[in-house]
Image 1 (spheres, rainbow, N blue to C red):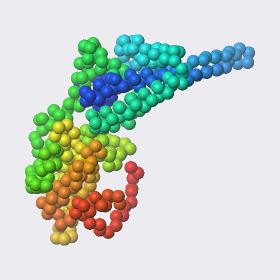
Image 2 (image 1 turned 60 degrees about the horizontal axis):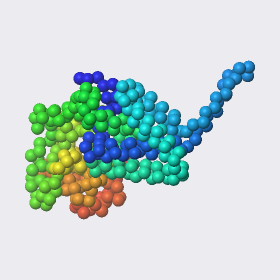
Image 3 (image 1 turned 90 degrees about the vertical axis):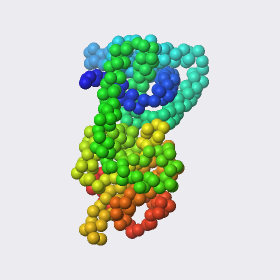
Length: 372
């Protein structure tokens, strides 16, 4: 396995959020615009530095009048030098043109206030376009929500790297980065190929067949695959889907999630039934829900089904997908001979669960033993 350096680590981090060709193209267009307009705004603001140093007997004074664009330029370029010197030097003419060069041209040939207004508006529109692209192409939040500084610093040279690769340059670097990307992200797909289906799924798919055979689900199942959670589903995309329901401040590694999966499967067999809805066209998991079986001494060793973590990606809401997942779990609870199913919900969701056939019963009491 290749040992990643600073460049490869940064590239793989950013690449994780920019896999779709359409989204990469949007970034190739709008990241340079964002960089340029940001430096236009920085270059329009004066920066005055006055410093006195030394003792009374031998003191000195330093004064410098510049703009905020100058220190920003050097901070960026020093960051690129740390990633890869040869790549930074190749990028330098383009970077200078996009930042100091064109910014100086606009501000010296046109009214400063006009340039500032245009730059600010174009900057905002460019951000909006990128957010929309992430939502509809990647189905996830941009990388800056994960690491703001690294994303803002690396985005311009990421676009340059992708452009250089498309021109056939730096083929050795391209091979290295893509090989490491395959080692990092391709392992799950390879594992799925060689794992027996029974080992890869949390519970046997056949358990769902009676519920999925209902005519009322045909419209949903024609667009979505409703199936058990698989070990290979445990990716950042799936974890982001869970964040829609409740965002975790700190996330364990994917390895810990996979360990939990096997605990649920092997140690607590016939207890956890987590299902997912996968878009037929994109392969993206857009919904999930859980049924947890509680074995009791009362009611003649009865079983109770707890429905938890019903969540649908915001882009796919309003299509009865959540109701479908919930109904399938209720049918599954009947098959597993549960005498009742229960769930907790916020007051605002009570009406939704009423429509799914559940009724208000009692009151929920809770005591958080840890801060989440």
